[in-house]
Image 1 (cartoon, rainbow, N blue to C red):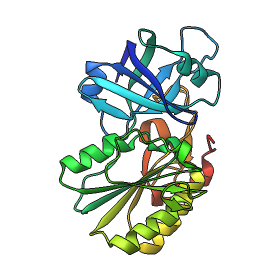
Image 2: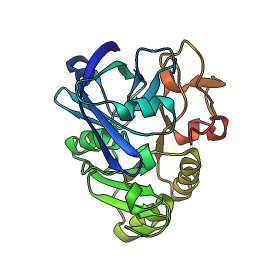
Image 3: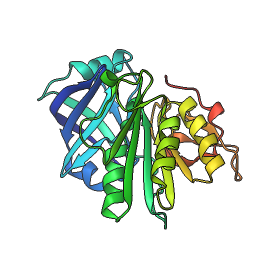
Image 4: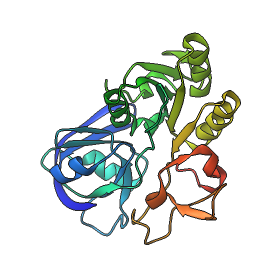
Length: 262
């Protein structure tokens, strides 16, 4: 893990209330793995006091990008940043996706800014020779946070303005029935309700599912004990999302124990 003051290279809006920030860090980019996150301080003031956790959206050489919604004071500060401004960044943090294995097809399912870790994961799976499909959902086409980095994208919108009319679970079911992919494994990130529905569906189909959990974090390194999730299996009653996650087998965690960030 490294802590650096980095210079913003690019700041842009890619969908309704969806923004990206890009900066350069040789050390963080070189160490980062799919599914890890960064803890970023919005500015040097004490308001807001706490850092914000963001999944790594893209790594290209030494350039790193995050994607976010503007939902509060911290993210509003990010949205006001311009090239040349600085950020205090810690990372990479957390346990990467567990994407090794003998499966043939990686299906990456995301809702809203749950798209964040999918480009890095998709690139890693493709480099391993896996077939990759992305299923990304939002309420409407204007909220589709796809900036061209998803592999084989399929979309789901509540209003049917693009792709499948309905949610990502329905879109996943349609894809599986239409394409019958070989030996699939699902990786997902999005709101807890979406992950719970995916868990029930994947269980009914016998498909392994790994979820990247979204939750509020403060320190990002396990000191504050502020991001516990209750475990369904194993010797531990709780683990911390920042140090043991954010990526878990869906069968190992009780999602209802984790407050939603939405």
